[in-house]
Length: 223
Ligand SMILES: *[C@@H]1O[C@H](CO)[C@@H](O)[C@H](O)[C@H]1NC(C)=O
Ligand SMILES: [Ca+2]
Image 1: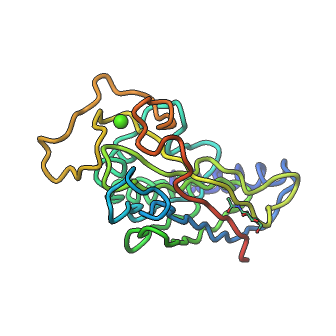
Image 2: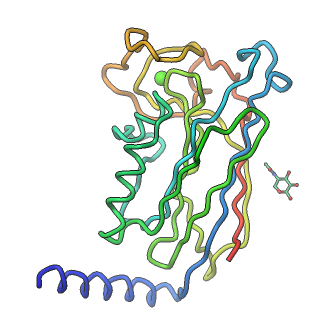
């Protein structure tokens, strides 16, 4: 009974949010990240095999939930991605938020985005949940990620048709390492104590990418 009342209440709340913004319907977006971390692009700056993006994961969500923000602390879910490349905790968190109405859809890639290649995920958005967040680890690395976060697909009264841009590396603020070593051995971890904010890696004077673009993103409305 309580569940039912809650469901009706949630539905009404979503309806009101939709009506209030002059928004209706839904849209499906294909979100692609291209990995530019090839030896051709980065030469001696990176290992000779290039670097990968760990299996990308993301979700569409409401403005009442943020998986992370730049200058905020990483959650355990984001920390897991940033340090291990595994997105299980993030996907579980996002999936668990679907029944609350805060998350509309969740997607994750089957494998890593190899140097010079592109991975695309699909997200359904609607008026109450028009935001998209997607991220992956730069691997191997201590705790560096590529990401788009809290990106609104509903602007100026409509679902946008497409958008693109560049990706730089962000330091997730949970590990002090500075090398491209794989943390298979936990003794190599250098936990950042106290935890720092998520910030552009270029703000660290030891930025291995020298502030350069390490990827691009492309968002396209496909339905
Ligand atoms: C964005 O799209 C335009 C038009 O297709 C293209 O010329 C530009 O290179 C793209 N930018 C990025 C960062 O991919
Ligand atoms: Ca760090």
